[in-house]
Image 1 (cartoon, rainbow, N blue to C red):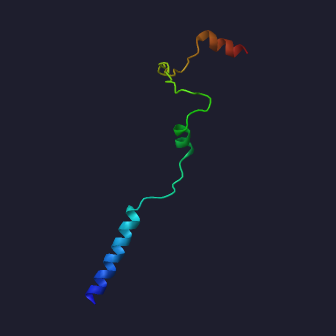
Image 2 (cartoon, helix red, strand yellow):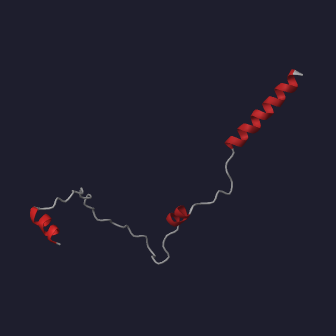
Image 3 (cartoon, helix red, strand yellow):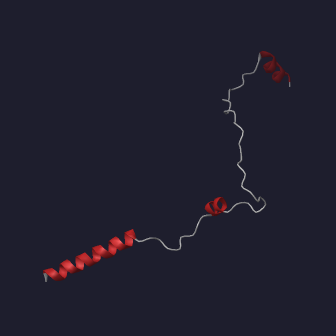
Length: 76
């Protein structure tokens, strides 16, 4: 009886481990991966694209109205 239980448990453990460790077959690649993998049809030789250095974004500052601007707003 003990052998039967032990065999049953080991079989369950083995099947669970196989299920966890098995490789997924037929996984579809994402569009992004396909775009990266396939080169553009128009180019014949791969070119290295050099991107220019971008300036960091300017910090936005709240714009205070001047006295002239406030009086101009009141007149309208």
